[in-house]
Amino acid sequence: MTRLSFDGYLDHLRTESARFRAVLTGCDADARVPGCPDWSAADLLWHLTEVQHFWTRIIRDRPAAPGEDWAEPERPASYDALLAAFDERSAALVAALEAADPAEPAWSWSDDHTVGFTLRRQAHEALIHRLDAEQTAGQVTALDPELAADGVAEALAVMFGGTPPWGTFTPLDHHVRVDMTDRDESVWVRLGHFSGTDPESGKAYDEVEDVSVVDAPGGEPDVVVDGPAGALDAWLWRRGDDREIRVAGDRAVYDHFRRAVDQPID
Image (cartoon, rainbow, N blue to C red; front, side, top):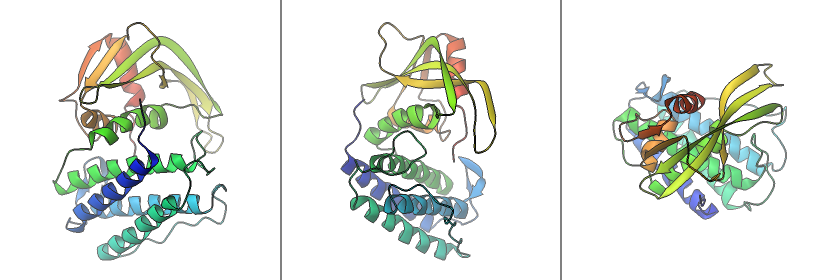
């Protein structure tokens, strides 16, 4: 798959953040967020504010990692103040990214330590939380197909796939192809198991069902999952159902795939 240009990611970060803000402006602060049931609209607003504030700091301090002096910002008490805080932090993130070269080194929790990682990741963060805001307010609009298609690839490769240096991915000889029917694009994933112990949390993972994005291996996949890019992106993020999604192939392979990606992401 071809990624968007870095200018394209930045444009989407602007537009998705603006839509997020506009939808939440008139929303009941206590309305529940369907994709994150423990959150209210105010919690959702503060979450994206904190996220964008954090990554602004990462870009401004590049290439340094977050240090011990990092302190969470104080949450404003009123909803109007939350909206004002979002305006300030969102504008700061866009300004920091506008001033940076995407190829420059910058810390991230992934294996991509460049400014470009933040550009792509934050465009998708804003997209999914824009959808959260719309679902909360009952004002859902379509996801941009190009960004959503890239979001499918990013969700599978970065959010669900990818092996940290402290873990091991053991591949199986099974593949799933995810087809975006409105984009004529596909993502291949290989099934496997992940094992390792997180050195920060101490949590151990023992042969957990996992996936890894791979190039087309030749031959036919065990399973094909297809649907429009927007529906697939929302489904992978547990923000949409499977009404527009079709599955064909080995059910046991699909069940492994589904368990690997059926994880809550805030």
